[in-house]
Length: 187
Image (cartoon, rainbow, N blue to C red; front, side, top):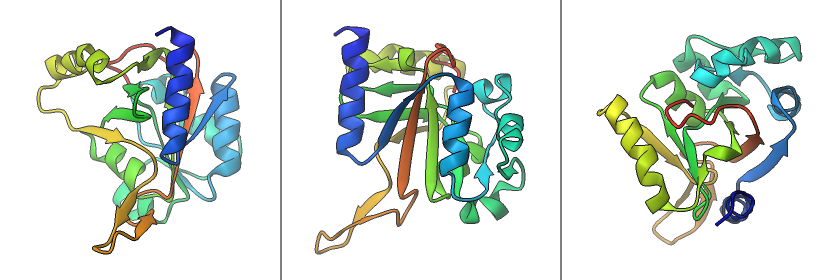
């Protein structure tokens, strides 16, 4: 599978499970996209590529209210959470995030919207192709907490009535941003 077909496969699979996948032209375009759609304050914990690109400061400059501390208090009422991703799996439309840090878990699960910044070079074809990525993460941090995020939160009751957003975000927005980071160890 070529790089372009892996990206298209990812977009199709993620779309089938209710995620919005948007190709953005750089970090500034990603910031504009998030700022325009956040619907309130944005939980922006530190993650490697986010710190390197100064995402919190850029969001503030775009006029957004940014929460970058006391996440337990503010995340449940925030309009959105913003995280990176270590890699993604095209076959299932899944984003994988090493979220051992509590702040990342809160940003990706409590706000109504979750925005994920993902470099398309970090999309692998399937679970088998993800093994080297997982091995690298495990070698660095054996007790890492890995979140596999496939679409917005969904649950069903005993009668199989599906509900979106009860146990997590109602919306998942994955922004494909070329040049963000091609390092699988870095979200």
